Image 1: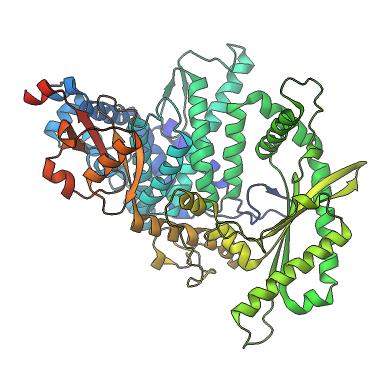
Image 2: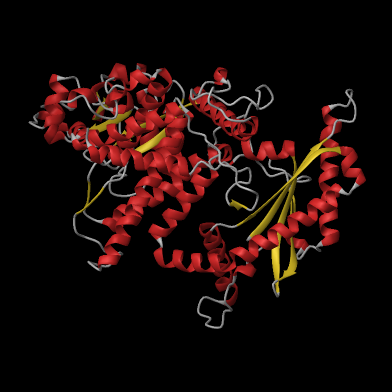
Length: 612
């Protein structure tokens, strides 16, 4: 009974529950009535509590330091010959291996009390059933991947590049076996961020030293840490914040957990740029009530006009209208872009540039109209329905522009006539309305339900398009075959679509299921087509990369790809190649098939070293 662990676990569970507001309008705060969505089941909460305690135990028992030592040992010639390190002894005596699977299989021999990130089947959780155990093991697998990333690609001291963050994000999804475990690890990122914020505020209150340059050793208790020793709060804050923005916020969005995504972005923004955050929050709070009132007024007006239209009543089954105002982080980014454009236009040395205000952000207030056409007869073809839904979108846009004229016709976008390269279709335009003594600009997006599904969950979804942009085939959402009313169970298996016994409502399932369905299919496609591995260079165990390869690739293929990316022209005969800490023969290089999370270490030996 470690009371500190229990207290930390309870705090983590509270945070997990507090971010469960699944809204249909992505990216921002909706002005529609918020509906509390209890995404986390009893099993996931049990798994979260055990996972928290396991992570604390793993760190307290030195697991992460031993893994880092083992990676260094496998890539440093001087340590390769002889070592008295704990990791070397374990490697020789207990068959310690690296890689995600290696950590999970061998970490129990590292800790005397069998406590750590793999101990889900040894810490008593099995008493709570198979589902809780499965979720905890999946979370442990993701955490193990994060640990290897910290060591191999240098995340321990600095955040990965954006390119590496994208590959790491895909790797985390690939190794996961349960969507709830992805949510747990995303909330863990927010937990770490809030720990940093809380400490900064505590330090500021006591006036011990400036919050921007904290160099003393300090103790806080975020998940994964037990007691983490931060020698530089500033550096740690930058690393954790960038990971939140580039890895975990996109994962939260893929899960349909938009409130969690906003919390991650907002808190990371607060840590990275405290002064800009204060300015953006002041601007946001000073105008929030007005913007919400404007958004509600526009939505109510559109709703009234649409429902009084006979043609729409005849040809549509439903028309949904959503409104939102930009969050501080998104607002700041947009203001920054506008400022940069203004400086480029006026000249960087100009001191006469006008100030930028919230009224310059055309989509600070935005509405989205989603149209579901009514089938006119049982014989009507899908082609006819698709044609009518396009015409209905244009018709609704005309209704809106008749009421509020388009401000800048040149900026209006017709992505229905000319879809984006990723298949995205929608009508966008900006109008304005006079309220509270000011002209408020607002954006309206109009699309059909089919277009919306493609944008949110299909090939036009953000995660698929990023993969497509890198030459990986776009991933299908598979929406045509699955029952969107069925809430997927925890297991990320396309055949496991079933209504969980703890689901509370059909509406909740309808909102959540498409996101999880798309994520399930994306994971299945990635695992079918790709494998993601770590490659660590010679003599430096923390400057490696996550490399995406075709499925069933060999170790030789990974080495060749790494050398190609770094313009390295050397023969593999000049290198000793390790797979998860074990050396490979020349034959094994070409015959050993890689799995997600494997670690390849490259040790380039000088001629005399090879002879010895």
